[in-house]
Amino acid sequence: MSKTTGAAPASGIDVMLLRTAASLENVAAGFYAGAGRLAVVGEGGSHVAAFVAAAADHHGAHAAAFNSAAVRAGGSAQHNGDPRYAAVVNSAMPGLTTLFGVVGLALTLEDAAAQTFVDFAKLAGTQSVRTLFGSVAPVEAQHRAALLAMQTLLDHGPADLAAALTRPAKLPAAASGAALPASFYPTGNASAINEGASS
Amino acid sequence: MIHVSRRVFLAGTGGAAACAAVAACGGGGKTAANTYTGDTRLVALAAALENQAVAVYTAALDAAKGGRLGTVPAAFTSFAQTAIQQHAAHAKAWNALLSAAHKTPVTDTPLAGPSLLDQANGASTFAALGGVALHLENQAAQTHLAALGALTGTDAVSTAAGIGPVEAMHAAVLGLMLGQSPVPADFLTVDGAVKTSALQL
Image (tube, rainbow over all chains, first blue to last red; front, side, top):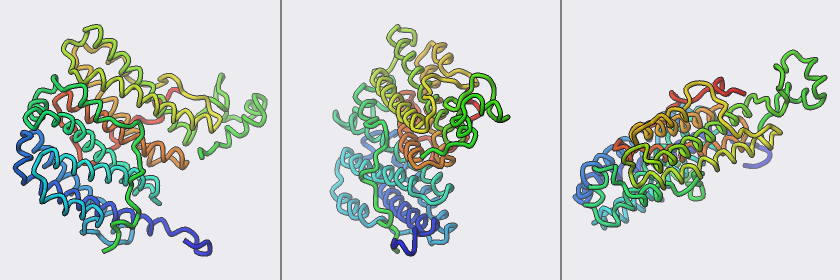
């Protein structure tokens, strides 16, 4: 922004943040919906299938919330996917033949969303938009924690993952350690504020 | 930067004499450094909650090691150790902001209401202890979200934004150990957030 015009109005920045956020959620919701139809997801047992279904619902709800907020801020809803991550998913999906691969791709999307929403919470121009990002980022972070634990449990194969999730008392130490990698959620890989804002 | 209230400014410039002349300076023992208002009150509350978490997990590890919780998931010891480190780091970050605002750091748990440490010490099974820890983490995550919406200082907002998701991740892992869903809700709310009125400072 030039010095003569000053900073963009809060609503203008917020619309950009919210449309990019919605675009990320659109990619995540679509990914999980597709993943739920893969046979390899069933190999992880009912808990994994339930997680995938719930994540699809969560991301759909997040997209709706971000779009509603974008409209309230004077913008329009974003129904397209974030171009960067849509390309990642489109490239990877045909080759997803293992549950480990599904979990890995899910982790990429969840961390991208969490980092971005933590960053956007700091950048938001209005309290309500900041609070919205603050209410969604922790949920993406929880998705990531669960996936990190699953990824560790998958080291011994899908059957071990399914067994571990049905016997929580037997959850190994490595699973909990892997699920909590940092004291503060990082934002180094957050998306640019306009990454998914275009129509 | 955390805003400094007018009351604090007056107390800082004239010491006890100036404070005595201003009705709003508060009761005995209160100084500018240990008077928390606005952003500093939210930050002090956050620091107190982090200290509470460290105390609860420390007690939990002692109880698990002493065999007072029955069967404990193998994952719990490493989880609790990590949680202690991370909550201590959070407390350090919050107290750094208090120090920067010339406020006394909060190193204990001056909170009104039922003591989660007492509840943890009273637990005789992992399920009971886990329930206390899960409540603690959910409460911490929600309080950080409430703070995120109320704080005005850039550094404090940034700190709240980076900590809340980590408390939520702790809750997710506890959920796995308790046989519950690691992600039970689509949005974090503030229904269970601790209010600043609970801070006994």
